[in-house]
Length: 193
Image (cartoon, rainbow, N blue to C red; front, side, top):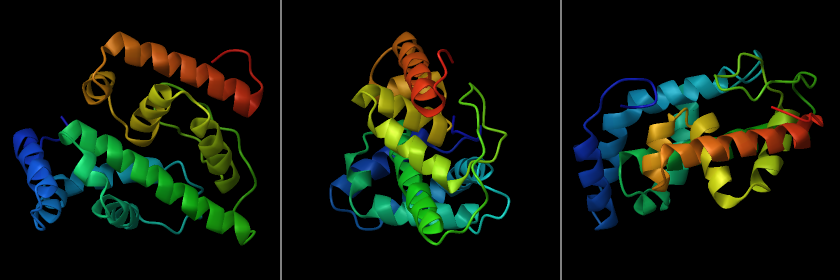
């Protein structure tokens, strides 16, 4: 099941990923056609965290992430879940680049605190907070960083993350709790998540 709950052919996406790795130049376009709605839903969830004055549309985020994926990242994907993990990372990179441009131009609203809860953020996130969060995520242990990317930026469930990282769900849950607590302490000086 995809991050937004719809079903796209898992086996077909995996086969196309293998074809892309084998040199099929059209495979990536076919993958995007199959998962485009899922990627837009994922992008929409990410952009809801952006200030209401945002200038990026979900389709724009998907298209910019596609450029990053098409430049070779997709060739590392083993299956559909791994593809969505890479897409989440690409979207994170696009959002960080967008936040840097907005911050550099001295545009955007003032900083607002948001919670790193187990659900989608309901609070808007400022460009400065996205940059701070990005720097903090980069300091996590590699597996914890991937769990945060998959869960926070990819909207993936624990079982999907476990399959992508080839660990059990308890490990994903444990990494999420540790990463979230560390991020809280780093971002907000809080003692617990």
